[in-house]
Image (cartoon, rainbow, N blue to C red; front, top):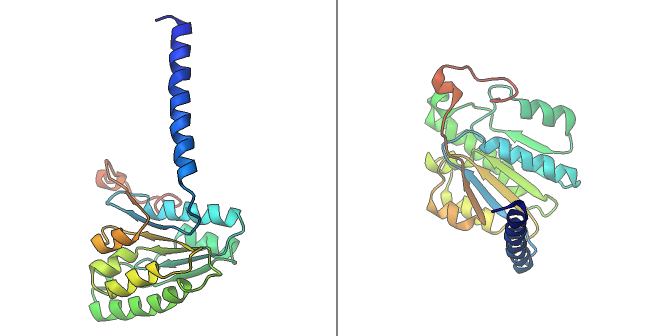
Length: 202
C-alpha cells in the first residue's frame, strides 16, 4: 500500500470515528450533575478527584472536599487547598488510617462527625462539586449506614456533581453512581521498597 492509499484509509477511519463521536455527543442531551465513583486497588483515585477539583475551580464553581480516613499526616492537597484555595470548603476526618487507630468506637464516632459535615453539603445547591475522598471505607467497615449515604447521593440537588473515592464500596453504591471507574494496579513502587514520595504519593 502506497502513501496515497494509507492517507485515504486513515482519513476514512477518522471520518467514521468522528461520526461516531458526534453521534454520541448529540445523544447525550440530559443536563444535570453526575455521580462518579473512583475505585480499585491502584494508585491515583484521590489524585483524579483532585484533578476534577482543579477543573471545577477553573470555571469558578463552588467546591467542597471531605476526606475520610486521611488527615493525620500532612498532605500536599491539604497544604494547597488551605493556602491557595480558601474558597474550597475543606474538611478532614483527621484520624489517620483505621489500622493505625485500632479503635473501632473512636473511628465510628469520627466517621459520624465527618458525615455530619458532608451530608449537608450534599443538600446544598450552592455546591457544584462535592468530593468524598475514601468514603467507601466507611461503608466497608460499617462505620456509617450505607443506605443513608446512598440516599444522600441520590437526593442531592440536580445540578450538583459528587465524586466518591476508595476501594470497593459495594454494589448498591455502584448502582447509584453515573460513572464508575476502576483504577487497576499493575506495578507499585512501594512493593519494590521505594519510599512514598512527597508531592507524588502525599
